[in-house]
Image 1 (cartoon, one colour):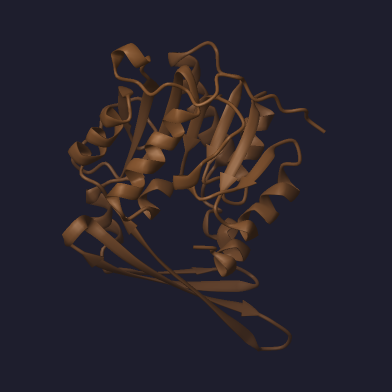
Image 2 (cartoon, rainbow, N blue to C red):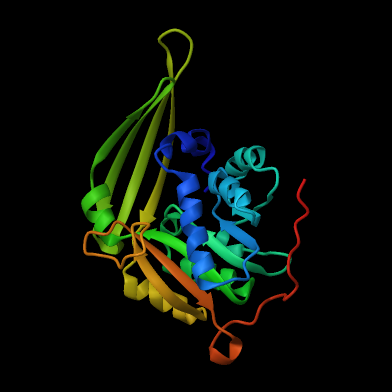
Length: 263
């Protein structure tokens, strides 16, 4: 999925997200569980808003996304990062990274469980020994009770968006249809549309994938806090660590550390 239209409007739709605050949150978690993280993989980096903030915190960052349109925006915002256009399930790096962050429910966009399992294993493959994989996912509660079959409306000076959802109880899928109305000259508007699905995974299924990939679950937090999840938690944050091969981990594909020369 290229998100050709979505790339033009993504930053508008996520305008309520404080990327500096999210970056500091992930930075706090990384520092809590390791003292050896220098190189970060921003997986499904989108338009690079989180990448920018991770760079400002002193990390070297590789941004990976499957949308060339998204990466075009990201490269203009974060010239100090290295960006790669790759499908997450086909992740292929030049060496190992210290930690991976996958934020803003990007893994929920993978609605095939086998593909999600491959993504997790590819991340593990390119993670240095004892490296971290941190990610967030929408919960079943959010898909059922918040997104559901609801319609949302967003508006700013030059564009408005009608967001329509259709919830399917089986696999907790939400079909999302976005219609953008972009203001042109006079009273004319141009309509652009995007559609995609998101899936909420039961914790047991997701955690089995993590264990199978040789990842140790260090913590699961709720809604960008350091508190355990509750029944009405909308977002889970996982902190996992790669196990050594002798404990069931996957041997790194290449133990050579990637070096990024900033411009």
